[in-house]
Amino acid sequence: MLKKTQFYLCLVLFLAGRLVRADYEGPQSLEELQRAIETVLKAGNTPGAAVAIVSRDKVEWMAGLGLADEAENKPVTTKTLFRIGSASKEFVALAALKLQEEGKLKLTDTLRQWVPEYPVENAWESSDPVRLVHLMEHTSGIPDCRFSEYAHNDPTPVTLPQALNFAPRYRVIRWRPGSRFAYSSIGPALVAAVIEKASGQRFEDYVRDHFFVPLQMHTAGYFLTPEVQSNLTTMYWSRSHKVAPYSHLIYRPSGAVNASLEDMANYVRFHLQRGRFDGRQVLREASIDRLEVPTTLPAAQSGVTVGYGLYNRAMFSRGYEWHGHNGNRDACFVTIEYCPELGLGLVVMLNSNRASTFARVNNLVRLYAMRGVPDKTPPPAGPMPAFMNRSFSGLYLNIAPRNEGYADFVEGFRNLRRIRVEEKEMIMMPGSWRWVPVSGDLLRLNDGAKPELAVITGEHGEKLLQCFEGTFRRTSAVGFWSVFYGMLASFGVVISAVLFAAVWGLRLVFGRLKQAGPLGPRTWPLLGVVSIVGFIAYYLHFQEGHVHILGTVNLWSVGLMLDTLLLPVSVIMSAIGLWRHRRTPMNRYVYWHAVLVTLGLAFITGYGLAWGLIGLRTWA
Image 1 (cartoon, one colour):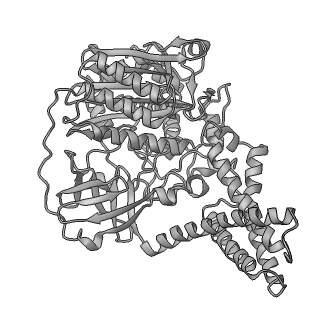
Image 2 (cartoon, one colour; image 1 turned 135 degrees about the vertical axis):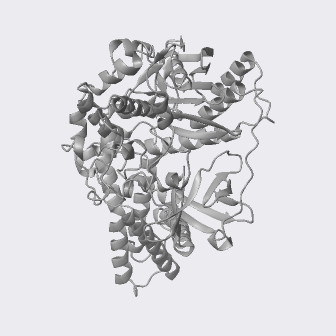
Image 3 (cartoon, helix red, strand yellow; image 1 turned 30 degrees about the vertical axis):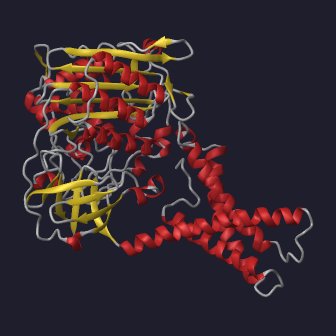
């Protein structure tokens, strides 16, 4: 689904940054680079890309590669428009910083003082109100969009007040603002509402006048106009290679910008020139500096100065600090990245959503851009804190998911990290992140230059790990593995029920099932099997471009709800049937197998209830 794609996009791009090494012989000429990118695009079934490498003062290389539209054999050019997705969020931060420079607002202002008409439910309001900076650093605790918000697709288009009045009941702050990081696309829309009040302009108009125009981003915009439609790349889903339709976002500030490679190349140069563009000071250098630094998290207050700033992420490559943001919208993948120290930046835009292809292209471009740049030697590691001994090792769970309940049910496993503390380093898996101590409670990645993780103290006195990956608290290994192996065993007996049914079903058809006994104990568990298979089929089907179906009331979404209800019904009916026929003459192996299958279904039902998957209403 969309959030899953965003998660993997962020992960592969982070990995791409770590993969660049001087001992890897990347492309040494533009011709080699272009051939290498074209090879990757072909292998990844991706029609086209737009790529730029820039320095502070000029565009070093810019090219459109492949096709913008396969049916019309239309090539990608430097003027072809792509959807930049969540990279749009940074314009919200820039606009807020501009208004702060003009004395019209402060990042520390509270949300309530500006837009009380869009309330959030905050249990800590009296002591810890939601501030603009919390929303821009994703530390407010507000959840991410629900399916109904992602599915909203009104081409009218809706106004910002209409968007923010669409689903206000879900704006519930889940923890003390400023204490944990959790990505949310609702926050930028709330900040945009403040920007409209402070500036007296519609948000999109303010960004156009104060950023698009001075940065000569001539074709960038938030709306699907006839001109945009004629220049926009066709987008292709990576699995099916079907054309992805254009979606009209309900929260445009969070991800609706369409822009060309030329637009985004200018935008990266603006960052490298620290707020200037070709002689004009668009934003003060101090504001650009502030954009790049996290401040609200406890980890930041402990000394972590790199991470996620104001809709701007940081990462290290060969010891050099890079900044930027990535995004995916419909089936476009885009990233903008820049390294102030080297005076280098890059833009990569693809018209397919294959994350692995995107990461490989991004890696090739950065390899070429950094050719000849010597690796930085990491600073010496400090001593391991005394409390971080082998007893500190264990399982840690991210306690700041993007959403709660069904919207992030897979996060229960994906947000888990296994920590192993050794004499000189701490290893975090999966991913084999190797952390070395810096000083105090701060750690850095072994190939990084600055601390990116802090050991902090939670509200209840427990030790937490906080870094770019989340806020992790130790969890019971017994509890987790009990659920994990319980689910494995449950699915094992459920699969065996399918095999058993195939055998006795054929025997029944051909009249070879003698003294079968009552069919209820055999058939009721199969209803649960159908429910599980149906849910998996739904999940796989809706991975690609079907969020509008999940987010609205229709036969598919209602069918999914009814499918999930089959599971507890099958468990109840199976239990009743097994009890009623506990002494009925029948094959006892069949009977006890049905008991095992029913227990397995009951275990899976319990997991589904815990995550809100039973009676699931995705449109709510």
